[in-house]
Length: 490
Image 1: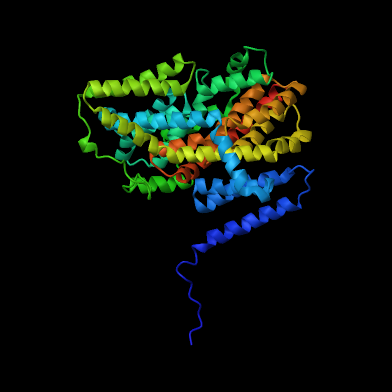
Image 2 (image 1 turned 90 degrees about the vertical axis):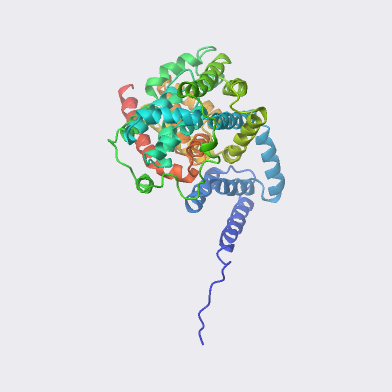
């Protein structure tokens, strides 16, 4: 008799559920064993470590983040999981920053969808095709566009990728490499330009934390730009990549091999959702103006409203609707459908970013950031502080995905520490902003990573994994730079 036990077809389906149950029981047990009057200490790291481990294994960011959220809530209050999840969801969705992100991402998605359905993106791509003759020129053009669209990383991630997908597909450049080039000229560029949403936000944050006198936040920010080592390193590396002087590393090599074999779009990604043959056709000059004018209005309106991308996107969307309706490229119903469909496309990135904010809230309640900083504070010195600030805060932002929110918690700790050691404040701010840019660039569920992958047409994990070797190389260069600066300036 054959006694071999045959595995049931649905047996593997239960393995993830069993794993989740065991993890939940483990976190609940840990929470019950912890005395109420003790801080969480090293336990505060567990949810973030679970997110990273689950994401690497499953390649599914949203589900991995949700696992970390549930585990964190179990640590905080295992008897009130459902109530805690409901309260946390409501708290995050009432956060002004999240509402801003939802509206900006949705409106940017709608605007780009109108540009695509009005034929403007296709016309812009066809004009570039006549002038770009090979892969290197196409990548250089993508990089140059990323440098020009410096006002906000969201605008960069969505607009540049949408306008360059046709060209990179034509020259068999993988969507992952397109996402990497776009992402590398998003946050790293925004921190280096004082006329950006990042500069406005961090300048105000520096004033709130008494790093400078009232009104001097932007001056300190500008003084810190030469010390933003990661931004400069990321730009150097992406420049070497597009010039072909730095070879494809790790998973990027496999993605590029697939693209050279005729498949620039990765498996599991649908092609663009409309037939380009049915798009409205105009003259080359008219089509180019229909693309450039909305972009110019978007940038100009954002600057006019004190670097507010939400108001800029609103003005640009209304302008584009009037412009296209007046030219009879799309009727009113088609314009509204384009806006709504563009908003729908952004729902997954919005969900990932919102979930990342939930993780950040849980980590704040667990005291993760103060624990990490307090753990290494006894070993800090004036010479080592810049490199340590960059390394620690980069790790925190990478773990939480919140390149802005983390510094609301960390600045009140880091700034007084730097002041007590009489460390150069521009150097300290440069290390902090470098850490923020690295976390936004490297984290697989940061807003910049998610939007770059969404705009470029590849999976979030596919983009994150192929980009990680370059981000780590930039991080290593930044650490070395801060070590040199720490000893040279002290």
